[in-house]
Length: 469
Image (cartoon, rainbow, N blue to C red; front, side, top):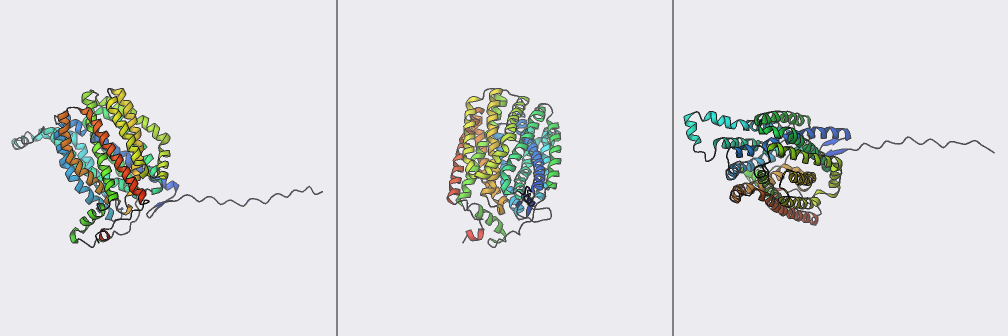
């Protein structure tokens, strides 16, 4: 009897699983490189969120210097009619630009410092006005201004900053979509939303309340810090290579203008997206009157509002850290176009309920927490939605067309809205205004989904020459 046991042959060395590769255009990342990219993009979003937060104080200063709602709306509309024509020009230019630093980064590296300088100058405008007023000629000229002089100067400086901010906000979104693989956009947007919340916490808890007594320090200190980290992050991000842009053959010198409007406004699918975005923006306009209800009607000072805002962001941050990545993954798998309408409908319900519920800082805290949670989810969805529905080759062009569409109409509606609320003398109605237009937006996004489903998501890249035949 043979007791010798033959050992089974050794298992062959298992081939290591291939490292996942992520690509977008000519850019290819392994997992480590993708993480490095996300880190720099997160700092990018942190910086722009803080700079955006500073601008929320502009209207507070104008109101404190005696400007009416109508005056602020009229002044805002002046800049609003200029910005829509800058956006498509710059956006389309960046789509077609080819250079050693990419097609997006040069615009950000130029526009961001100019935006920051004018932003930081805003709280000094009343002093600048009073200095100029010493000169008889300037004093006589200022008497022709149909509103309080310091408020007017704050508004004008804010308009100039806003024009460059519009360039930054447009291009930095395009940069994200150019360098982040579409397969991970939902997860990227969840991280991005968490970083924006962290920046918001810093603003709400440690900076916003200081504006009651240190307005200039808030603008300058926050502006310089945000500018430095934003420019550093833009410099560290690398873009890929792009194919040469197509040559427009029809329309002579106006060929690019003709191609822009023919391509962006000839397909009903894109027009419905533009309408949905318009209703959303009209709803957002009610936020200013909601703030005034809290600040002037309920007498909540900036410190209290910052405290409430900070705790609401804290709750949202906790939610985002626990579930944000899962929501991003869910968005990637289910497709954001399916989720826009339900998410906006939920937000509509929360805002409508807030009209009846908010009466002090504690009720505001509860309502604002709910609002922020839904906005967080919606922010993840919309970032991926844009890339899903617009042609990637002409992303800047279509995003700017969407912005032109809603900005022109919102600016026409702005003075009328200001006159309406001056007449109503009821800031609380801002909640009903927002809920109404959010409802219209949700219905329009539902129509977008039906069109997308009918075409099975297959919308060709529009070409002006073929569309005009």
